[in-house]
Length: 336
Ligand SMILES: [Zn+2]
Image (cartoon, rainbow, N blue to C red; front, side, top):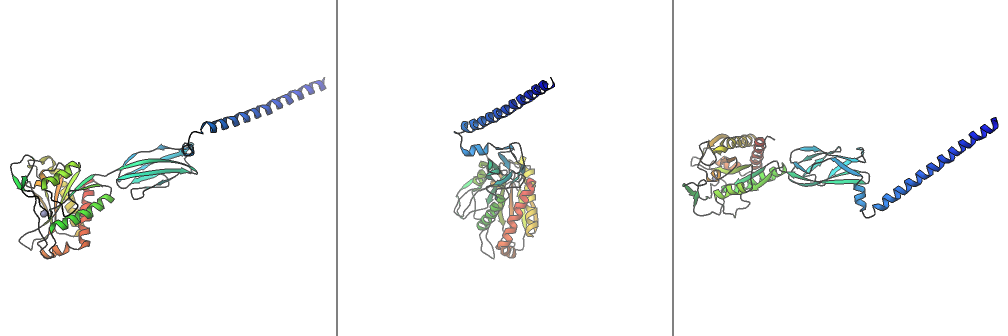
């Protein structure tokens, strides 16, 4: 009996083993079939798509403002490890090893997340910090005639004039203002602003009202008018900023913001260049200011009628300081 029981037990164990081995083989076989089937079913999809489908962004943005950062996150089959990030245009945006992207200037960049042979990409549009309209004062080419000094105004003023001229250097105001505006455009673009210019050469005749309309059309956030002063008294020197008052018939509602903009730009420019600060002056008779639909300032960077200030304003290093200072003031105005 004992032998019979033992042989039955042995048979049962043997059967279980055979069933177990068979089950394993079937499972393995089925898995193989599943794998082969899935590979076959993907035959119409490109190799890239198969690769990209293995890694994906779980945190991403397609629009970012210049001057701000955002942490992207990509995972490979649910695992974040070993994912590295890169951007195609480092001038426009940079990214850390952990995926923190910092947008620098307006444009479009592609961020790539990579894990081994797998990669995925996202296209990002970088919005500007703000839109700045720059108006290099005057031009050697004039539009003849007059225009209303504000929308609907019965007071008419000459469309423009050639401006003043360096008493020692002979440099015309329109040349100095264009050089300063070009320097500012470069700096502001690098700092993430969109810059619009009312003129970019010395061959354009444009009236004062038309200058403001360029800024209005571009929906600029601020309008910065660049000029240099002149006076029959050659001892007067220094910089000033002109803003519209609350009594202005056309942009009284923008007086406070214009005053703030004037102060920011004048303070920073004088701080950087060492120019004497004459202060702010209220003016409601300026055509280019009255036609503007955004906070506006007119900066008089210095007196071309003062021999030493005129000579200083011809130096490239001093011009750089004036331009950088005005840009610093714009950053201050926006709160950057
Ligand atoms: Zn001027």
